[in-house]
Image 1 (cartoon, rainbow, N blue to C red):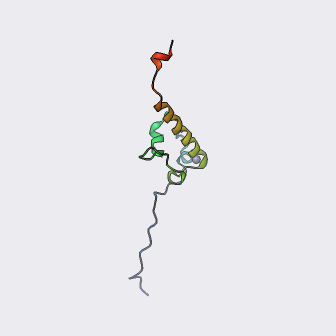
Image 2 (tube, rainbow, N blue to C red):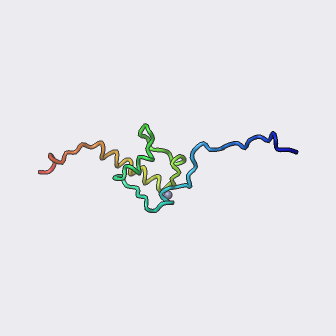
Image 3 (cartoon, rainbow, N blue to C red):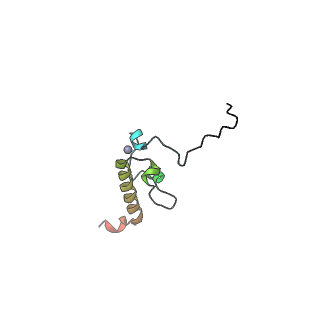
Amino acid sequence: MSNFNKPAAPQRRRFVRRKGCRFCADKTLKIDYKETKNLRYFISERGKIVPRRISGNCAAHQRKVNEAIKRARNIALLPFTASHSMD
Ligand SMILES: [Zn+2]
C-alpha cells in the first residue's frame, strides 16, 4: 500500500464559511439604518439584500438587517425638504 496515487481531498468551499451570525458573535455590532457601512455588507452589487444562507446571519438578525436596509433606502429616496417644511 502506498499513498502515491491517492486522490486529492475534494475542496469544498463554495462560500467563505463564516462562524455564523456576525451580530451574535459580536455584540458591539449595531444594526442601524444609519450605519450604512455595516449594512452595505449585506447588500449585493445590484442593490439586493444578500440572502441569509450567504450572509450567515441568524433569522432574527437577518430580519433586523432587512428592516434597516429598507429604512435606509426609504430615507435615501426621500428628498431633503427641510427648508420647505419648516414654517
Ligand atoms: Zn444573530
